[in-house]
Structure formats: C-alpha cells, structure tokens
Length: 90
Image 1 (cartoon, rainbow, N blue to C red):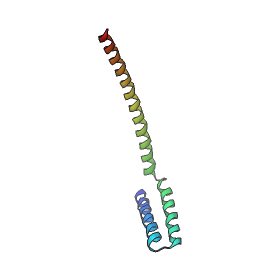
Image 2: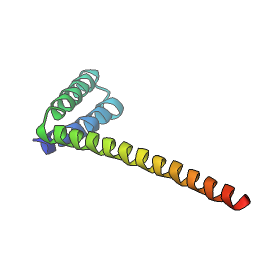
Image 3: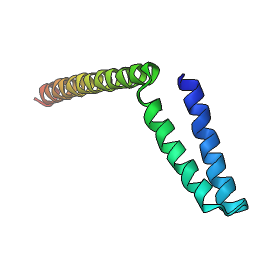
C-alpha cells in the first residue's frame, strides 16, 4: 500500500506542475494539491512508514550513545596523556 501511495504522491506533484504551468486550470491544481496532502497523510499511517520511523529513532539513540562513549574515552585519554607528560617533565 505504501508503494501505491508513494506513486500517487508523485503523480499528484506531476499533475500540479502540468495544470499550473501547461493548462492553467485552477480547479484541477487545487484538486491535485488536496490529493497530494491526502495521500501524504495516508502514507504516514502505513505500517511500513511507522516501522521505518521507529528504526530511525532507535538508530539516532544508538548514535548518541556511541558519541557520548567516544567523548568519555577521549577525555580519559587526554587525562592519561597529561599525566604521562607531567611525569616526564618531573
């Protein structure tokens, strides 16, 4: 169903372009815009879209965790280097 809705969204954008620039039919441009909005709203209710959003959120959380771990390890390494350099100077 998601594929069909995505296809309808692309067709709607094409019809907006066609009726706005080529045919100059205001009613059909408005109908195309409404169709695009409706298909976009329906697309966000599909299970595939919801699963993708959940995966993206999980990936963002994991990325933040990795970044915080890397920053902690960088801080530890800097402290160790300072200790080593201060002990060499002494």
